[in-house]
Structure formats: structure tokens, C-alpha cells
Length: 194
Image (tube, rainbow, N blue to C red; front, side):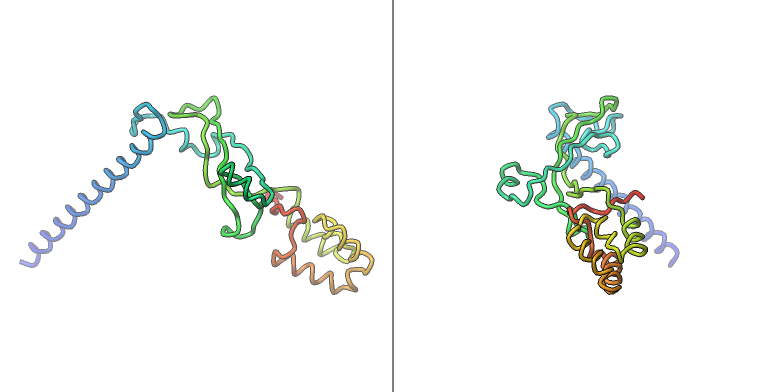
């Protein structure tokens, strides 16, 4: 009797999971249809061979750089997108914006080939490498070479003339570099490619 009850309950659970999975698929398909109908005037076949152009990864797109409004909130409100500030170490610190993207000419996709992509981080890279700066700080930090490398010439000259604050400033700058408190002067992020 227990075996029959166990088999019966197992069948009911499998049936419930199948019904739930089917309703989830139908909701995804109906949501995708609503999304695609707003993207183009033609009917888009979800199960067809073409992907929506707006859903392509960045490898198939040429996107403009984010617009720098330089802390001008009015300009950003007028344009509707752009960056007030660049950089940030944590995800929460980085601002995100929209940029204009165009699909490469060799890629076949469905919908408009030029569109606005949202969620692009406002990050700018320059020729500042963390490892290089750390090595300068360890080896030639008493001469202010790390500060020269970061573009902080005023404090670098002071560090050079005092020989790294008789060693104290030298050690403090190494600690500041390791804790990410000493960053490039232009506000750019560390270049990730060594």
C-alpha cells in the first residue's frame, strides 16, 4: 500500500513540475514576443535562425565611448544619457549609461542595426598600470617616482626633495597603493592589461 501511495505522489509531483515548466516557457516566449514586436515592425520568429541585433554580445558591435558631461547635471538631463564622473573601484561606485552601438556589416541579425545599449560602465583607462606603479613605489619610491608615474607632480617633487619624507612617506605610499587609496591623478582606472 505504501509503495502505491509513493508512486502516485511521485507521478503527481512530476505532473506539477511539467505544468510549471510549460507555463514558465510560455511566459518567456510571450515576453520575448512583446519585446521583439516593439523593436521592429516585422514579426520576429523567436525560434528562427536570426538573433535580435540588440541582443548580440559586444564582440559583434562597434559602440561609441560614453559621453563625458564633466559633472554637468543639466547637460546629462537634456541628453538623457552620459557620465557625470568616470571611475570607481567597486561596482556600486561606477556610474552606468547608454551608448550608441552599430552591428558589424558582416553580421546577420534581425531588427535595427543601430541602437542604444544600456548599462555601459563609465570607466576610462589610461596608461597607468598598478603593478608598474607598485614596483616604482617599492624600488624608487623614496625619489617620488611612483607619484611622478601617477601624474601627481607637486607631491612627487616634495617627496623627491625630502627623500621620501626620510622613509616615512615612502612606506605610507606603499600602503596607500596596496589599499587603493593612491590612484591616478586623472581619475582613470588602473589598466587591467600588464
